[in-house]
Image (cartoon, rainbow over all chains, first blue to last red; front, side):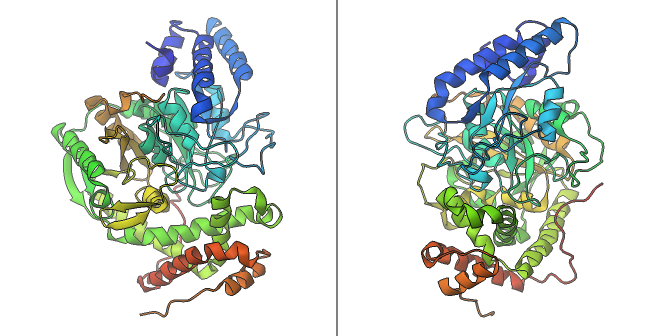
Length: 470
Length: 62
């Protein structure tokens, strides 16, 4: 088995049985980063020496019989908005180019305690404010599925999407305010989980919009996302929005069984607006689950039509509140698209903001009602595959759309509502680009979401395909 | 039908100044169309009957 293409689960098992050493695993990934990252631009900072040092320590622990868990010695890389002690955390910005945190983010510390090793920090749309994943300061991340044209990896966690897809790292943590985990997962052909709001601590993670931000794993399989979620989920006194609900063993839910699972295929505003190849792939995925015993019916969410302006008002207001001081003193240091989006927050009134939060309750209630009679909802993660850099317009099933709005259209409703949602590959276009589905679950029921995605991945091999461009 | 608010660059400049942002016409003119579209969309939301729904942000299962 090529080490870099092994899953986190397999790496953990091979390390625990001393089939491979953590040093070999880390070195293989660092070699691949050195070979491919000059083209992909997925990393902002590579922590080669520190990673090798941690790998040697993990190996010593293993020899001494100290195994921290199933991810002991397994490498990963966070998006560069997670605070990492003594390693710069830029947020993809010039403003924080030299910012070195004094402590790890809670989830980074939890993964370190689980024996994992940080390879480096991943590129992203500046301050996580853009779904294309572009960065004027550290270079635009390239989608590994298209070596010729410059297609976007999707954002904002673009480095995470490209690095996991191209096997520069087996796993990452992204952040998701309107789809920033699930969009790059969809465009790069990997698995990305946005947990329920409150399931995973955001302490030590640079915010974009406090009430819409979620953090979660980006991996090549649902099982690896479950392994990472096992470590990072749970109450954190440093994040008052985290829940004290017990954290189950998410890997225990991965039975491969979907018999009787009630799946609602999201039609209006979701599958029905996707381009034909995406629509066909998602419908085929629904059929595949049905053949495996799931019970599939159609569902339409009317209130979702209000999500776009209401979430834009919330995110613009909260983002400008966070960035206000820098927008007064260092506006010229933002990349142009992010600066323009931040400026829009100045024109949203308090009444608009509060009314948008009222709409949030309305939309959440409608999704809860749909899930009262179903276990999960299924639809496309993005209505289009990866666009070419600079592609500003696209055509969806209900008419023309700007590309940015199209990218976030299907994921943002579940940031607005807070429901857990996981994106995973469900096919490829005739041009060889990945197509992503998303499966949405009840609040705090990530176990069922991951069970459905894992079962689908046992039935298909889309998640196991490798990009030719990498 | 509600009368949609129109926002000029001059109005934007005054609103920004109230928030402590000294942005120029040249900086605001490129985003005027986006601001106009956002405000029109937000005004259309006024038609959604919300009754006594309380504004909330996210689940609070503590």
